[in-house]
Amino acid sequence: APPQTMDGAAAYQLSPWVYVAVNRIAEAAALVPLQVYRLDGEQRRQVERHPLENLLDNPNPHMSRFELFEQTIGFLELTGNAYWFLAGDSAGRPSQIWTLRPDRVRIVPDPNRYVRGYIYEIDGQQIPLDAVEVVHFKRWHPANDYYGLSALAAAQLAVQSDRAMAQWNHNTFGRDNGVPAGIVTIQDFVSDADYERIKREWRNSYGGAQRKTAFLRGS
Image (tube, rainbow, N blue to C red):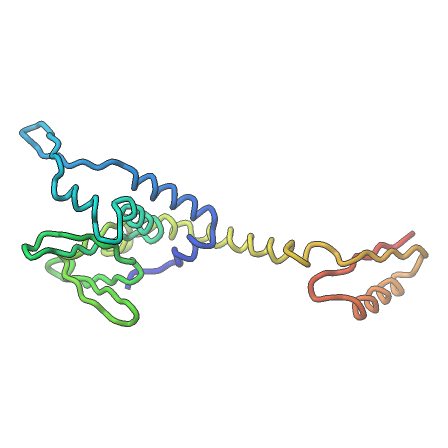
């Protein structure tokens, strides 16, 4: 299975800056206009309504070109890998493109062909896919020959630290936490021992699990 250094989907849902960064990149990439060219000697000539262009404009009955590239770039940013499944027509030409969730894809290596195929797992069911049916986009990974490395994985510590800090702030200053339930002012001078006894007795009688009482001692 692909190495999972952190749950990219969870980071995307729980970290505001991860969400914004990935969204901006994915949406910007999805809006880039695409054209098909053919080489005529040294000249590039645009091909109008090439079959590839038509396929990308209508990748499948449930997805637009924008959604196709938004999901592809989003998966690439979050996991370092993105996959297309190419469904062919009777002549073997791609007629539909479907994105595959990277966490469900496992590459089957081959010593001669590099990749023998892919396994796509849904609800415990393993679906074998031929290598020609799948297009694999990946970021360069210096320690893995088959799976890509995402920028999010490299920023794992920063994302986890940011999330932990946000959770600490929420626990500390959330509702019924950061504000004392009341203030007790002791006007007369009392000894340290009596002061600690008064605090202990008050909190035993009126203290709560979350909100605390603030004590002010006169001089």
